[in-house]
Image (cartoon, rainbow, N blue to C red):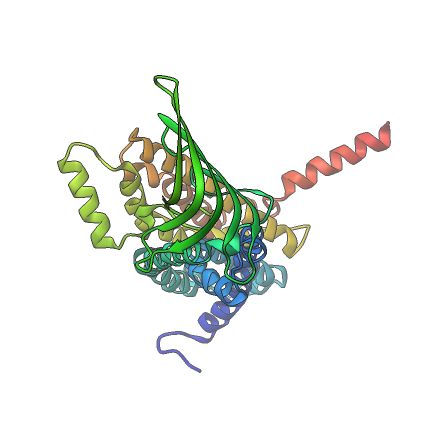
Length: 394
């Protein structure tokens, strides 16, 4: 299909770049997902969560991963695409015919800009929506499937501030037999509760869990006065807030819509207590997707350089560049969240650094001022060759 305004070489370069980009999105997203597989497997095995529910959770997690993989996949796609064309001397032939690198960059910039729009949409709309629904789903499952998460004759710490031991769980009605609870939610008073029987009653409004205990005693100690007391009961209701932090739920600012985030920031500023975490999240919505354009520009001059290790070396270069960007982003985020620097200035640190590298490298490559005989991986290859020569000499 012909695209209006795009010539044959534009479509050719776009295909060469978008192919590795799509592959990179799949591979990099899968690599990030594997970091959550252990937690998801634990939820299936220990908390009675079905595979269908896990698949739903993965759907809510994916937007946060894609927001990061889009810029990285652009760098990978441009590096591999231009590297392949450079290795086959196609770019040399194009430039010999009078086509400058500036002209060859047009389809790359067009594709990068389109991906930048998608990444911005994910940052401003899709990810907050997914995070909010992920949080709701995690809390709903923790409140309605709490009994499935308990294990007999094991000290369960799935509830914040509470350790729960159950001697036996009835398979017929899910009632608990031989219950021992250590309640340390109040630092001034720690209670130990023993009951013969108990049942878990999830609130239908999904606001809390009630652990109803029968025929037991409460042993309490007040930390300030070191006074202890013992209370017997026939029926005792213990209200529990399920632990929401299971390694998947995001912080509150990441679950807010753009308007909610602006209102929260303005209200905190008016109250004289700035919410630096919310301000850092707002700044990240603008700065992180912008890396898509920078990586698109940076990938072209890097792709022109030779790679003795082939495409695998270029893949490693892309990983190293994104790791460097991520480290700068985390550094800027820490400055913004501490209030040490304006949020937009702090979150722009990696973009400014890579903007300098991208413009400098691209201009030198376009004006034939760079050394196209050596690639970024040659430093590693030189180190390996020196090590082998020293080993052979020894």
